[in-house]
Image (cartoon, rainbow, N blue to C red; front, side, top):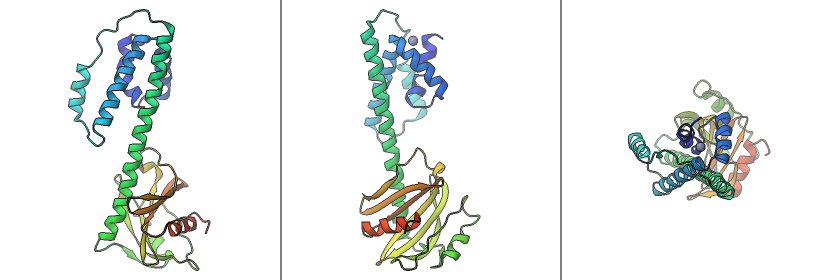
Length: 248
Ligand SMILES: [Zn+2]
């Protein structure tokens, strides 16, 4: 393959969009070819600049295309590089890729968490916060049947300070899920359940965490993502989470 063919794959490579076979091939080419490794570094630098310049700004694809044409590599110059220079370029490139991926992963996760908090806030503010009003889990659970593409179990609350208020359909990234509303000591808590695959990337499991003025706990179980949010005490958020995890 010519250098042009390798460099044409660099953007997809840096964005983690190549399949694993292609990634392995390009990896090994970059380890041997200083021209392509240097070009990779140059584009990585470019992507990092863009990423930090506009955290939430999404470039028009046409603009992106035009810019990429402008910075497209001139014919790569073959010249002899000392071995250490090649090694350094590859090491820097790989380290840079890791930083870039970590950066976009963190950005994506905080966007998802922030969307979940927004959903909770909009329920608090809504004039009809609950679509199925019931304190009986045997009424609430079947209400969701056919409305969302999965089922879930609700814990026995007897003997706990928690009260089920009801539930509603919620949407995260255009995917339907369940929002269950609980009350404890006059605080309202939302429990969101979505299919894990509806959420881009992988949200890490988090213990009770401060997010804005709320506490949030999130975890996965059986390919479902659970998220408990409210302004109740951290201990209450954790206790409700444990009940839902079946460890009550
Ligand atoms: Zn090359």
